[in-house]
Image (cartoon, rainbow, N blue to C red):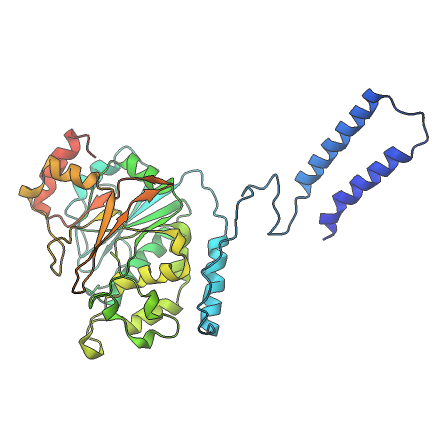
Length: 394
């Protein structure tokens, strides 16, 4: 408080001295010099002693005059938040309001979640080559120790644990990958990929796409059917209400702030760990990897996510698993079509089978939605390498 008031008092004293000195009336040029001097002193003082109030706007502030405080969505009016919710939201709000350190060498962390070896390692090697210092690689192999053929992957395996399809161990593996990647302060964006994922764009395009926007690409939509809201169970109350329950692809790409928030979260993660799992009462099957992050960020930072995933998956066949691409399916036209899609479809599981379309809009402009794609069989690698080497569609 003393420092905040020091420079205004100094200016007042300077003005008193200038006005009270008994001397002949100053000529106009002299007054101009005095006024310029006062303005200079004012600007220097403003720089040395900027306002400390978080609500004030300083000319020299590195954050500018925009709203640097990110308000969380208002709490539901129908009830009072529990102590655990208040504590959780305080931590999340502080992380969201934290001004991230600008690193000189921002990197994208590629997080590979795989049972064992990566069948497309040679293709990924081509993708990474020539961009050293702009990326980092982390591999979580849940079954067997992988054999690597690319130097970009050698020594990048992290401590791993078994992963069960549809179980909370899938989310735990994602958190394990994020935790290891967060140890490097230069990692500013984090992309989760499976062993069947491939790039559909070149590295420079991916790097700029992810780092030149301030959102996380987390898929989130309302599915009123049995495989969406039908998976919700009342044991999630009071923290998670049915109106907030969301569904989405697990293959996220997120900014550093959101990755830290996931590490800090215990309340909501525990709710999904205990109450979103296969073989629940009433023959319900809930899969936390499809619901935890979409619900969590829709509740706590809806404006911070894009509501689509940058990893393309074809669910148009309406089966339990998405379409898988074989070598005969990989053509120039197919890859070009994927690369230039600018709307993300979501298929509901109710009787209407509605297709919900999300336009892919970034910074006010419609953009291509996808940077990666899955699921591709290992037999497609040679064809993909050939296309990647000779085609401009990537």
